[in-house]
Amino acid sequence: MNAAENKLFDFKLKVIVIGDAAVGKTSLIKNFTKGLSAFETSTKATLGMDIFTVPLQISKINKTQLNLWDIGGGSRFNDLRTTFYQGTQGFIAVVDVTRFETFKHLPTWIKEVEEILGKRIPGNILANKSDLEDFRTVPYKEIENYAKRQNLTYYRTSARTGENVNKSFTWLARKIYKLLVGAPPKIGVS
Ligand SMILES: Nc1nc2c(ncn2[C@@H]2O[C@H](COP(=O)(O)OP(=O)(O)OP(=O)(O)O)[C@@H](O)[C@H]2O)c(=O)[nH]1
Ligand SMILES: [Mg+2]
Image (cartoon, rainbow, N blue to C red):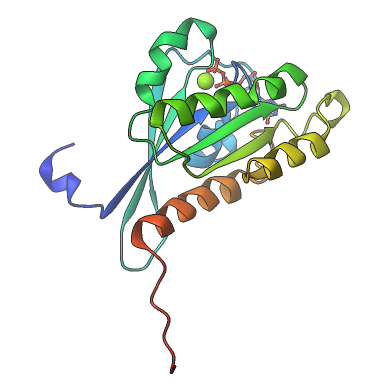
């Protein structure tokens, strides 16, 4: 990106998308950045990491760009992966509701981010593949309880139907944005 393009945005937000292999991270990002028609039933595993960039209309004053770092979930990227976490301002942790082990591994993913960054950052949990209700093995209540304990927000999503994809991604971007700009001043008479 050259200097002129750099000036186009007042805020650039970095969000990592994490979770086990094949939970649907890339599919969700593609749905968010390219729309429903981008869904593919057969996908290639992400090798290492990919970055997807999208402009967001969060405020009338500031132009914001969201950089989504799509982190390959395959275990062969274990060593490489954490180098991508530096400077991230938020995370989206994805679970595949048809594979219970992907939920079991969720705390490890979230802890890894906190350990690398040395602090808590805003994040949400996506219970993905909600369209595959007949094959669901993870009780939503368990995800909800875990999210509550961790003070995180959780959404049921589907990259296939688009359920809650926009809502969950923009919710996180807004949360990070608000933390960056601070709460707007209260106007009133004291
Ligand atoms: N039915 C359904 N299938 C999905 C959904 N999201 C992803 N998939 C499928 O799940 C498989 C894996 O999707 P990916 O998006 O490549 O998964 P990933 O998490 O990026 O995987 P890695 O890159 O290996 O970490 C593909 O066959 C997708 O079509 C969903 O919401 N519903
Ligand atoms: Mg992927």
